[in-house]
Length: 270
Image 1 (cartoon, rainbow, N blue to C red):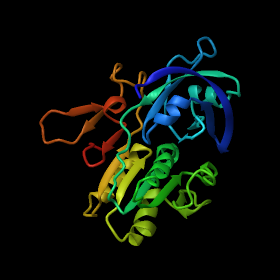
Image 2 (spheres, helix red, strand yellow; image 1 turned 90 degrees about the horizontal axis):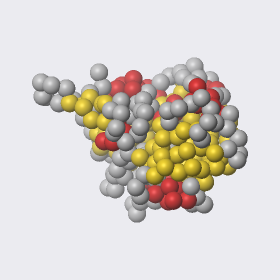
Image 3 (cartoon, rainbow, N blue to C red; image 1 turned 60 degrees about the horizontal axis):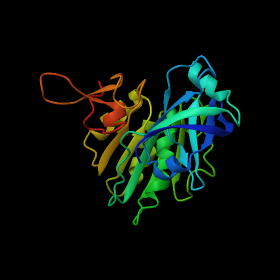
Image 4 (cartoon, helix red, strand yellow; image 1 turned 180 degrees about the horizontal axis):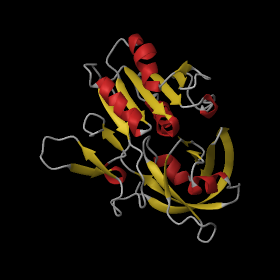
């Protein structure tokens, strides 16, 4: 499906945890085409607010009945506007955009590592991996800084997904960072090199790249990056990602157009 501008009507908005919310709208065409890792640009109806630039969001769920869900955290002016939306309000959506995760048929294990609002594309990915003819065993690791931010995933994740949670304040799940949860609790249980998928803060992705690059055998390593975007399709050039090369000059790709999913071993993390 080619990405398209669509004006949709909000059908639901609910608080998922702390300052985290789920926005629901109906878009049958997009829901049937969305792939895990893709994203949309979301903006208000003209004149409805003082928000002018659209905001990028990964898809959280694309349901068979045509509903689409966006999970977001109310941190800035744009997301606080979104948290104040009500059913019946109109918003503009441009998508689906970007290169999705590649489903690794043949990997017997899949480890999904989510940090904060990096959760949405991995929740959708877990559901799609289980649709493969030979689905892998899936471990989804989900970390937050504080337990009050942990989103309840009952009814979202298929029962076959083994969910691990971590909070740095120790109030929910494993006490510590999600990367520590991986090395201390999950990795020792793996019996075959896994396909590793991740999304979250850049520092977390860099730490994960260090862990996997330290002699651990993996089937693949795919990372979805979060970058500021103004257009979502390669016009503004505002989301450049530097890749690791041997060339003397820096080499960049665009997160919106060439990503947001990259080979995690090819990104220059520091």
